[in-house]
Amino acid sequence: MYRTHTCGELRLQHKGTGVTLAGWVQRIRNLGGMTFIDLRDRYGITQLVINDSASAEIKDAASRLGREFVIQATGAVTERLSKNNKIPTGDVEITVTALHVLNAAETPPFTIEDESDGGEELRARFRYLDLRRNPLRRALELRHQMAREVRSYLDSQQFLEIETPFLIKSTPEGARDFVVPSRMNPGEFYALPQSPQTFKQLLMVSGYDRYFQIVRCFRDEDLRADRQPEFTQIDCEMAFVEREDVLRTFEGLAKHLFKTVLRKELTASFPRMSYADAMQYYGSDKPDIRFDMRIANLTGALKGKGFAVFDSAAYIGGICVEGGATYTRKQLDELTEWVKRPQIGAKGLAYVRLTAEGVKSSIDKFYTPDELQQAAAAFPAREGDLLLILSGDAKKTLDALGALRIEMGNRLGLRRNDVFAPLWVYDFPLLEWDGETQRFYAMHHPFTAPKPDDLDKFYTNDNALLAQVNANAYDFVLNGVEIGGGSIRIYDAKVQQRMFEVLGFSKEEAAYKFGFIINAFKYGAPPHGGIAFGFDRWCALFGGQETIRDYIAFPKNNAGRDVMLDAPSKIDGAQLKELQLMSGERSTSTEEG
Image (cartoon, rainbow, N blue to C red; front, side, top):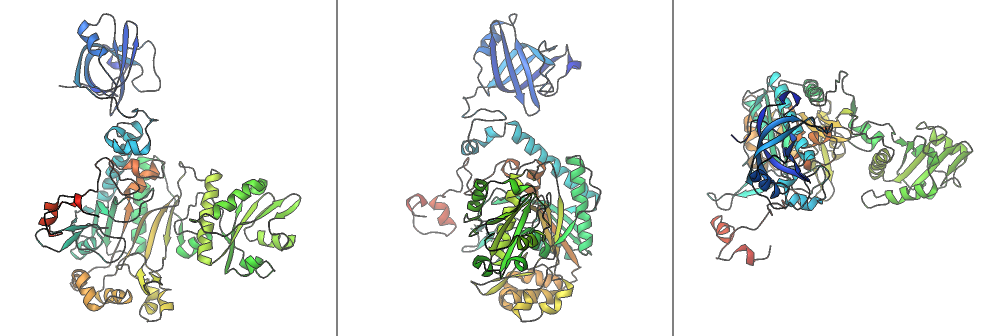
């Protein structure tokens, strides 16, 4: 056998035991007549010792070792004279009696250490080496543990894990699909699923009243730190449920994961917030409630006082930075430049400092101290606080204030990774109007049910009333990140037809694209609803990170490329011809695009 124990297993109780270890050479230290080798595998590091009494063969083999050589070592477990309390095996070492090189290795392009000297792009090219580092190993172990506990909890709640197809029909709504040409059906294409939405609803029609799947999904969209072209969802659906049943069940899942993975016992019910309140007070539909700093509407207090910027604005709002009155002019100027960045889009920033000497403000020539104090009362703010104020279009200003709030939370250290603040957000708008295409789009997806109280508005042809229809939808937010989203679904064929009508589909178009689910609803569809969680995001948050890449074994870069495989790539002209995607004999390497 190659090994009797792992490199993280041996302790003082093994002293005197003959063992065989195998792994990678982490580092080598030659100290005169003795050589020390740190041997590493997935489980840890064990020190090997080759002393003066070792055979010439062992000494020769040790002299030719390099970093990342794969070796096998046999010897006796002995107690270390100089112990290392930083590793679990630091009380012991192996006095080597046999040493074999299983595979020599070239010197890696970066150090395989917790803090590597390799840049992100270099480590991505050699991802298989990067994965040897402890931070990535711990990330994937956390991911494994979370997947195991998800399955354990959902199994205890009578959910069945059922696989759904990866080769499906392209959907007209949502993000762009990745498409797959069909050789056997020339000119026709499959799409890779953005989610198993219609399949899980069909499973409800089939009588499988509790379904889940830890499933790969695909979206051809622009990337961010928490987004990849292929990602993993915890996809779930339940029949014969209302919203409260779904929230209670999956709040239970979240509490189970907190308890089993993070050892945090959460007993209280998670707070809930309407979409309208989230936007009004936090400028975001996924508010981070680890800290307060709520947005206050200052339009009534500050408009109409002769300051043209505010008088011409549809909305004036601000945040209160507790203890921020000590901010210097330089710091305030830097914040002003920050809000002017294109991704924030504000034209400027007004401030009010509440000091012991009185009110100090960038707009004090337009307002009396009493008027500024009246604005401060809207928060409420106290002596020593700083007000940061933006104005303009209501939506854009709230968005900018939401971003500024998060930035201040970061600067003040209020967004600690070891603090968790879960939240349910509900009552989202059902529809979004797009001025360019002059039509409504589903804010969630076209199978989301309108709230029962809004059905009268849903059946009007008045766009203003349709825009007021709320969805029976909900999001699970954790630390300002949307971890999951779901809804109670439409299960009546007539209501579903009406939804397609509102979205601008003709009956023929709806039948062509969604006839299978409309027909299924005619055969006894139960009331049902569900939710899908971003598994990669959840893992990253539990690991204290903002980016999901370390929690995916082989991720793509910001351009959606796998730089290790050099994918996507062109394919041979013969393959294109077989798929009837091109004519002639030319290879794609000779063609543009």
